[in-house]
Length: 179
Image (cartoon, rainbow, N blue to C red; front, top):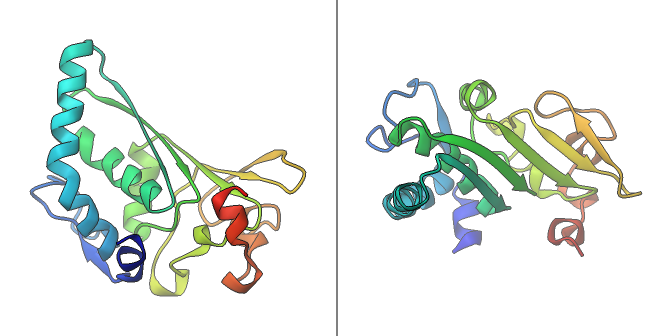
């Protein structure tokens, strides 16, 4: 399922019933949007229940790879459907999720720490030539295991993910899995 979801990479609109009030020019990876729609009702119910039982309104969404893409979509989705919720997002090895309009919305509305690891090639996918972009918030783990804050989205500095990994053939699946 994750490989098929990842391969369905057409930019498409989000379901306005799930994402009410978002600008119409926002588009996301079709496979990620469809996978999110399949679980949105269950995630919303679980978060509402946890908030009700705990009395808290702070939620941290976390995910790796495809799970990072879904976490980011949840971080956009939940505040649109639960008033006064505070979201924090942490992703690891997340691919690009949407277009420039999507990343602009994320940059303005979603606190995110987007962790990338050394030569992991997943964060450079899908390609920018297809219209996909990254939001800001990248923290790139270097070969010496130090961390570098990479300003902006798709930072081409050689010490950041996009500048470090020019193509998938220069990347490392081991760095994606943390091996």
